[in-house]
Image (cartoon, rainbow, N blue to C red; front, side, top):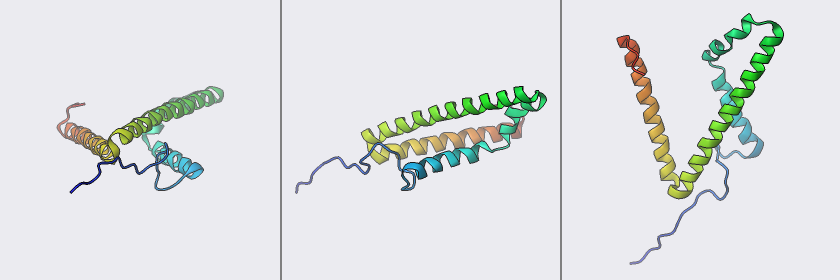
Length: 125
């Protein structure tokens, strides 16, 4: 019996699907996620120098930090999004799933190494 071997595309546009949201809702979801992640206590360490500066210097420092962070993270996010988009167009959802699995495995591996290093008192990474 014969059956067709066609390409199956589930997305008909160049946008990433964020839980079915579109436009400004999608943008708000992405930026909201970034904002929540940015509020972690580690961020306080990076902005600590501002507490020892005169007000104008501190404002300039914090503004530069904010702009630099937004540009860096925005660029990184755009790079990742475009890369995943290319993988999705060439390898479909299976390729995207493989990237997600590999990323999670690497993150877990690094986390385990950090915990083991802390327990053993050794800088593994």
